[in-house]
View 1 (cartoon, rainbow over the protein chains, first blue to last red):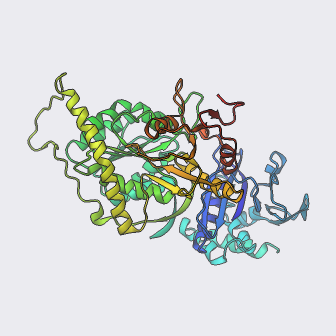
View 2 (view 1 turned 60 degrees about the vertical axis):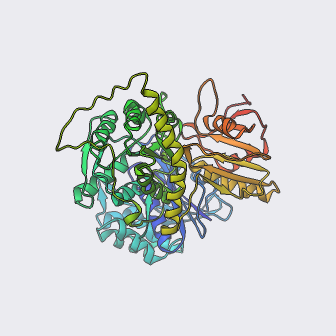
View 3 (view 1 turned 90 degrees about the vertical axis):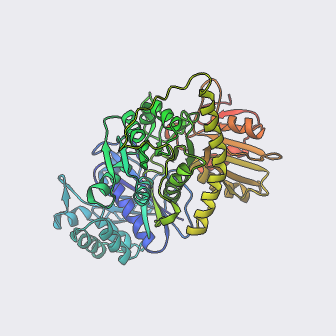
Amino acid sequence: MYEIRIHSRGGQGGVTAARLLALAAFRDGKYATACPFYGAERRGAPVVSYVRIDDRPIRVYSQIRNPDLVVVLDPSVMEVVDVLHGLKPGGEVLINGRDRGTIQGYPARAVDLTGIALKEKLIVAGSPILNTPVLGALAKMGIISVDSAKNAIREMFTDERNVRAAEAAYQELVI
Amino acid sequence: MLTVATGNKAVAAAVKEVRPQVIAAYPITPQTEIVEQIAEYVASGELDSRYIPVESEHSAMAACIGAGITGARTFTATSSHGLLYMHEMVNWAAGARLPIVMANVNRAIGPGWNVWAEHTDAFQERDTGWLQVYVSTVQEAYDATIMAFRIAEHEDVLLPVMVNLDGFLLSHSMQSLETITPGSFVPPLHLPHAIDISNPAGYGTLTGPDEHFRFRWEIEQSMRKSVRVIAETEQDFAERFGRNYGVAEEYRYEDADVVVIAMGTLGKEAEVAVDLLRNEGVNAGSLRIRWLRPFPELDLSGRDIVVIDRDYSFGFGGILAHSLMARSRIEPYSVIAGLGGQEVTFDDIAGFVRDRKPGREFWFGVNGNV
């Protein structure tokens, strides 16, 4: 089972990112669950969402303690939350923003999702949309296929700019 | 069709297939997504139904009762305080023998204010004459909702059915979902005591001391008959659509020396704990109770039993544990865990089994046994 924890702030689309990722994994023929953790959210508060991907049906509903991958949609969350908490040895980090090399020994990949969203003018209520471009980055990392990433986005959104943003993230992420 | 959905969306999709003529509902976290989605189906014309956005849950159930007595198929959804607010009408629906189907997204009762999973809300309605089923996956939420209509409307039952799913854990989790076209699996509703709206007449429902008990006894007779109707319905569903459920779901149960019994999503999490324990050489199994009413007859003799209650009756104990103690004459280790969404992992459940003390009650997260 491959376990992913997504860190964001309320209103940035972390929950939708988790659902898109689960949908894409499902379209790849895998079992997947997206379990957002709902706390006492309000806009701007740090939030986490969980995605599990497996070849067998998934029976776990509790929160992910030891993720294989941590995705940070808003790097400012790292100042208040230990995003690496419980990350497995050999685990990976994907961060929206500038390249930071490794973080506490974990390889951290970086891609400017915010820049991509702004370039495509993907902005809702004043915030750049990060949940569709991040799918392109996750496809580049091999978590999901490129086709399934695009299909998942098209299943949930009609605006083709979302697909273009995912393609841009795929191109820009250096593996 | 194979797709993905949240538990809430799955319930709404099931309702769309069964096409109730009247849906009356009031939104409440974490159920709101169900009635929002149904309202969208009605607005877009995908579902030809009368949607009544009422001003309270009490009115939601009253509207279902009013429509139901004309013979209309009705549906509503609620949660926690919403369910308790409609409590009077919940009783009325069963007493009036109306096969209303309601989804209840299980949530704790305040104060302190809490929107997370707990079964105490629905357990407080267990003596009302409603059938109650508890589900553990998105697919099961969908399938159970479709089956609920057929079971409720069966001439030998004619009692309302409540489909329960854990707040957020299931209502907001996204999983795969295979939708179906029920077709003749859910035949049209025929309510033998429906009023004739073209020939209006007044009904006095006063039943005196020499009559009232007869109506109560009829409810109990139907409740007993519902055991067979549930089994037949689930069997037919399995034959037509390939998924089989039963009153309780067994996992590595046959040869198990110690059995974890739980409901809802904790029942699934327990399966992972069982695998963990088996790897340690513990002969564990699990049993996920699906139907709270009618309550199952289970032969649990000769095994150690650990019961997890996501509910509590103050001054008494875990309601599931005590129900099993009474029905199956067991001395379980009674664990109270998961109240108000308290995080309970498969590791925690494995720990309950390892540290079990038959006959004792244990509150998870609170120091010491009770």
